[in-house]
Image (cartoon, rainbow, N blue to C red):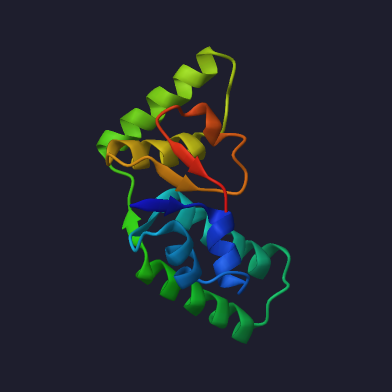
Amino acid sequence: MIFIDTNIAIEILNGNNTLDDLITKLSSDKIGITSPYIVELYYSLYKLKYIKKELSKSKFNELSFDLEQLIKELNCFSLDLKNAILGAKLYMKLKGKRQEIEIFDCLIAAIIISNDYQKLVINNQKHFKRFEELELISF
């Protein structure tokens, strides 16, 4: 299982890459996404609609449909008690080292790690390189 971050999903949704391209380049047909990344994707969509007011109703519906279809093609991993506890631990461990990052990033890392996976395809490795348990893949 290889997980993708929000930016990779957005590239797919924008047509800059396809899920098939990603599968071919990564040599894996098992692509995962975490529930915090899904929150980020929908957050961005709703931000365009309600805050920036840049989307017509039809464009919002089109983007919502495309996002829903993409998520259906991915293996979704949700936040549960086990990885919520690990996420808190990771967050405080980094904060104790004065390497504070967003709690969402710790939850994402915790979901991947607690499900015994390591690979995360990501464009910006800045925050996630702090998690020794993760193998980061640039795309």
